[in-house]
Length: 121
Image 1 (cartoon, one colour):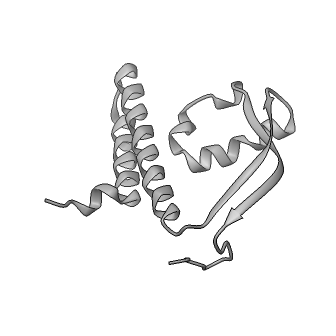
Image 2 (cartoon, one colour):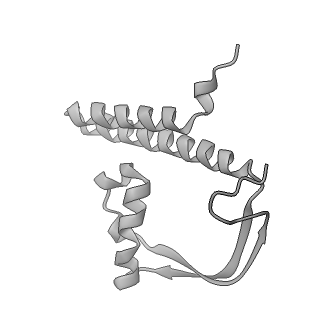
């Protein structure tokens, strides 16, 4: 029996939001942390299905370059907001204390039509 919602990114983002809402109600810190971790896994599933859906369009790009660890500085600070925006479960974490990997892009390669609105189907 097919369950189409299982591979729907929106479904998993909603489960993540429910888990985070429930975690706010918990007083037990360990249980709260575990539930927030589950919410994070739900967000990862949503991202997986969103990325998988995008990959079906045969629009691919490869970026090559050097990686650099940023432990402090303006660029390290500037990286925090996009991460928190993409992964809401990071809001409760002290991610600013961890290094960020910056990739200095040196070459790109693409396949398919990458123009806005292109589907390549």
